[in-house]
Every structure is written in structure tokens, then in C-alpha cells.
Length: 528
Image (cartoon, rainbow, N blue to C red; front, side, top):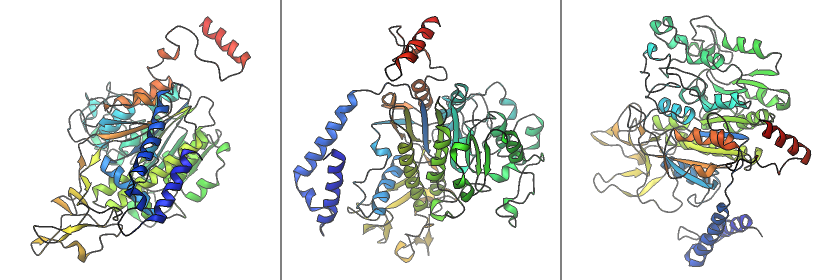
């Protein structure tokens, strides 16, 4: 019986032996913990043999707003959804062998925003808040500070190296995180030209939606929301034609979807706007895919229409199947973007279900790729002022109450709380009694210490989980902009290519290819 099976058997036995004490009977025995630690130690010892292969594929999973407390709470939720206590559960990202911390500050902000951080983990350069794909010499909203300050992303480095590239997000495809992959914009809110001040348009600055199709015109896979930024102003949305708020917003009269479709019609290109059409595609017959499933951001996972909107996991599945056809490999950015939105709204349940869904997508990506040739990194852009505590007992619902009442106002409180946000509630001059409301419903806004219409980001470090070639280089406490440099080094793209010939001057290892091809490659290497 291998170690994985042993762990599974122990977990099953644990469930069977669970008693009223609040934890499995076997946990009372010190041997249980010692044997678990020894298995973990044996696994850790195998990591002494470092994976120094060249990464053919690169996948970056970005949980927007997924701070460490969110990771822990999502782990418990995942376990509880599977009928377990939750604390002992492993997320897929927990299984990655290497973990580091990322310092998330922007050049001009101690507590960052998603645009400046995206520029860091995509372009390898720290930047000012609110700006994407430009250096810190650019000033937010000042169009004339764009030119000459553009910085390129790892997606472009991969494309320039001949790899296929893709973007998958649950936000709109021209939101802060995905836009750093292709755009150079001094204002993250310039989604379309209809969102820009006239003087910026007149000065030659381009909106982000336009840059998606013009800056790197051959991105292989683009999936998420954002339809209304692609169509002329007042054009009814194909899914919600009667709702004017979803109409097109472009003032230049351009139909960017139509332009893209015309450009790829003879290149195995497909445009889809619903789940049925997406899942009907044969990835072997598609080289370019544009999927825009909502006018703006996609729906929360808890509210998703499973008939019309694909899950993040379903989008990732299709994306990898299209991208992996390229013999040179691929780069894929995957954003679980609405974790952040749930927290901003004080809706912890929405945020945590988004995180669990992203973890499912990570699992799916792992099944479709090999750790020997694919470097996978999971991280966050920033944290939130989200916490859970209150001395809750083992197995307590992550959305439940603390086991005591406040010793100040004698009222109960939920384990999950926010430092600030819309959940600040006062009834008759005192804190709301949460036992009088349904604190487990999907849109419950957890109580906060300070009233704000929107909860804020947190400034603490976030985790970086990594596996695959050169993943060991993501270690310790690092600046956030270090991440794409490591990934580029692992794949021998961008500025990191010198090491791709061994330090001794000999040709790279050829042990995994045929003898004849090895001879040809060696001769070519010598001649070059």
C-alpha cells in the first residue's frame, strides 16, 4: 500500500471513529501524529533531488485577494463540503512542494492595488497603483506619461519564444490582472474608450480592450467576461438585449469581436459567448479561442448559471487542451478574480467558494500536464482585511459562530470578521445581534470594525506555491516582481537564456530524445 492510500485509509477510519469529543479518537494516540510526521519527512527528503528540467509549459494561477487567511478558510470549507472537519484537508495548492512569501507593496503604496501588483508578477517590474504594463515613471491617469515607460510581460516573452499563450479569468478580460499581460495603460479603469476622458483619447492613449487585440494580436486563448467593452455604444448585448446597462460602451464605433473573428476565420479561430458553444468545441480543431461569457465580470460561482456560464475549471480544461498542442509549449495565466470582489463586498461565503473553485481548476491543470515539464505557480496579488477566529472548536462551520458571546456587549459573533467594510451594523445604537439574521446565506456581509462601502485590501505578504522545473527558486521572502523572472528562467525565455547551455560548456542533456536527433542537435549546437 503506497503512502497516498495509507493517508486515504487513515482519513476514512478517522471519519468512522469520530466521537462526541469533537475530533477523531485516533488523534488521542501520539503514534498517529508521529507516523504522519514521518511520512511527511520521507516525502520531504525526496525533494533533495531538484527538478532542473527546462520548463516547456508555464501556468500562473492568480487568486485575486487570496491572502493566507483566505487560503486557510478555503481549505476548511473544501473539507467541510466533503463531509470532513476541514482543518486537516489539503487544497491542491497545499500539495505543491515549495512555498515562499511575496511582498506586495506598490512603488507608491504600502497597501497595494491589483493593477500595480499585476505589473509586478506579470512584467517583473514594480509599479504605481492603478497602472498596468508601465513602469513607476508613469503617473496614474496622466496619458502623457505612458510613452517610453511601457514594460512587457511574461506572456509576451513566451509568445516571442514561439509558445502558445492564453488568459483565463472570472473577471472581465480587460480587468486589472489580465490586462497587465498585454496592455500598457496609466489607468486600470480605461476598459473601453467610453471609459476614458476625451483628452486622453485625443492624446493617443488606447483603451485596454483595444490593446487586448492590437498589442499582441495572436493570443491563442482569451476567456472571461467583458463583452460590453468590445461593442459600439448602445449595442444591445446578445444575452441580455433588454438590459441597457449591458449595452456596448465603445465611442469609436468599432466592433472588436467582429474584427477579431474576421482576422482568425481562416486560422481555426472560434468566438463563443456561452457554455454550450464552448463545450461543443473540439480543441484539436481550434487554434484561437475568444470566449466572452458576460457583459462585465462573470457571475460568482455560487450564483453561476450552470447551463449558460462555464466554471473556471471548465475554461481551464479547454484552454490547456488548445494550448498544449504547440510542441514548443505554452504560457497560461489563470485568474480566480472574484475572490477579491467577494471580500470587497464583505461577502466571505462568495469569496471562499471562488477560492475553492480555483483550487479545483488547479487540480484539473495538474491532471492535464506533467510536473516534469510544466512549472505551475499559485499566488495572490494582495490580501484583504479578512480574518477568522474566536476560539472556534474543531469542525465548526467556517461560516459559523464563535463558541462564546462578547464579554463587552454580551452578543454572539461570527468567526469570520473584517477589519473594515460594509458589514458594520448598528441597531438601536449597539452592534447588531447576528443570531437574529441568517449569517450563513451566500450574500451575508460579515461584521466589520470600521464602516466602509467597500472593504479594503490588506498589506501583509501573500503565499507563493510552486511545483515543476526550477520551482525551488521560489523560496524565502521575495519581492513580488521576482516571480516572472523565475518562471522565465525555468523556461529559457525573455532575458534568461544564457544558462540554457550548461556552465561547463557542454550541450544540454539529450537523454530523453532519439540517438539520431541527439547527434543532429549536438552538431547544430557546436556549429552555433
